[in-house]
Amino acid sequence: MQLFYDILVWVHIACWVAALVLWAMSLRAPRVPKGMAHAVATALVIGIVLTGIGSASEAVHDPNNAKVGVKLVIAAVATALAFMKQKLPAPNPWGHVVAALVVVNVVIAYAWR
Picture 1: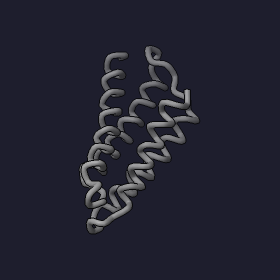
Picture 2: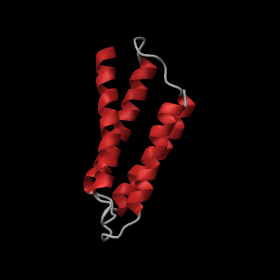
Picture 3: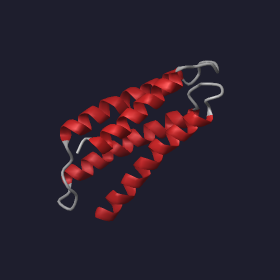
């Protein structure tokens, strides 16, 4: 179970990195790329799965529920914004907002122990 959990953690991190890379690639014409919306949504779903595995398994440490709750709200808002605002034309500042939420989520993951 620990190996499966570790693989999911790395895929979760890769999704956040993919969202930021896609945002960085669209800086010349700010927008929310479709791949960014999908990466953030996938990270959200994998985060929920990781929380379930951590809560149910004896082999994996229990998650910090307050931290998970804050991260869940931020990820849900980022996902909703990414999907709602991705169809706006090219000078679209909402991509910056979604990227900022992703960065806040990553900072919370590493700073809140």
